[in-house]
Length: 146
Image (cartoon, rainbow, N blue to C red; front, side):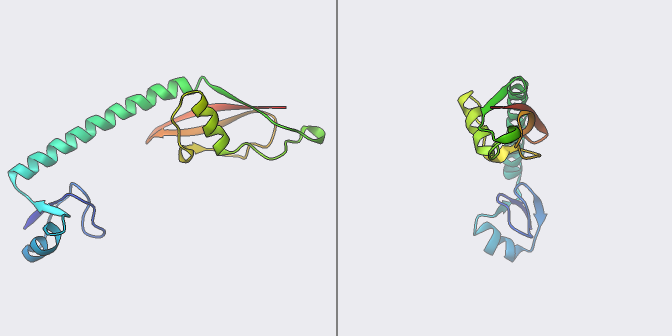
């Protein structure tokens, strides 16, 4: 029997995948537990509509991310820090501090989206990468002053 997976099932199939399985397994496990539905014209139409909707949504989200990338690239985040002898910075600028500063400027960015390549422990300008969407990364300048 051919089934369409409606949920991911480890080592069996991913959502949207069409697979041929034994009738008993399909009826008694996959369909009964809500992992799959029988492959019919109606269910195929639903699957195609859902995939088209998801693709359209992905396109819209990517466009939004590109707009945010343009505006965020113009931003410079300033952090005032305490320094010791020889302008040595006490501590470093954290991902949380960058997230908070971006939120103050109106950006909805999560900590997991921010990537600091080298710890920010010195005065001056540093670049931080922000992952806005798959394949859409923005760079924001961080200016550390005393």
